[in-house]
Length: 217
Ligand SMILES: C[S@@+](CC[C@H](N)C(=O)[O-])C[C@H]1O[C@@H](n2cnc3c(N)ncnc32)[C@H](O)[C@@H]1O
Image (cartoon, rainbow, N blue to C red; front, side):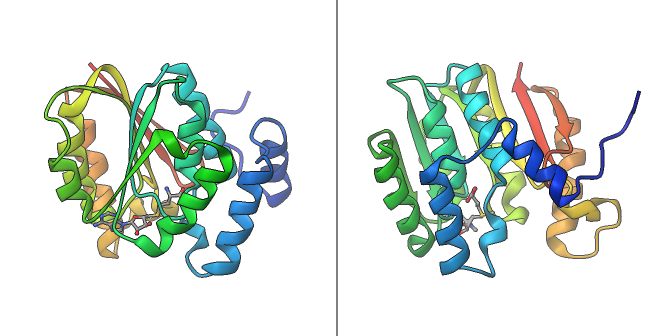
């Protein structure tokens, strides 16, 4: 019995994707177009197994009201939108019209555009403009790393009891162990802060670059 995660070789990673998270043709085209249009930024996109996991979580929680902080070209939002209840709604926050114009095309192609509301601007401001009540079922945080504490602070009170917050890149490629860059230090500090937050129960999972799942008490 092994007690720590396997090191994922490329071959094993492909096996994981093939056995539960294979992108459909729309998501596959989105992966390829992002790589072609934005080769240096394509690594920001969630991995296929994370996309599969987000769809699964949206279904598992029966999410009707979801929020994403950091949309980029739309991989994670597409995944969340596809897992929403039929009358579900996803609010997407991003600062870039360039990136999200790609997302909008793929939402339309996947037939989920009518359930997504995109708000362009600094996420902290967009968050403060959201209803001031605990109405959210599912939140995915994946924008600029120094912004995470503010996104957390603005999000937690807006999540209903039993609702879920999913936070990406909490391992920073392992650099949280010895953070030198500002973004790595920000995440290391964030991880300590949320661990002490008694409004949530949480678990950190070594999925892709690390995911924290927090359930509001
Ligand atoms: C890691 S990417 C998101 C990837 C996306 N979840 C996906 O799966 O494709 C981070 C995104 O955060 C956005 N961003 C950066 N700073 C921001 C800010 N202050 N407010 C809102 N969005 C911001 C960037 O434009 C970028 O699209």
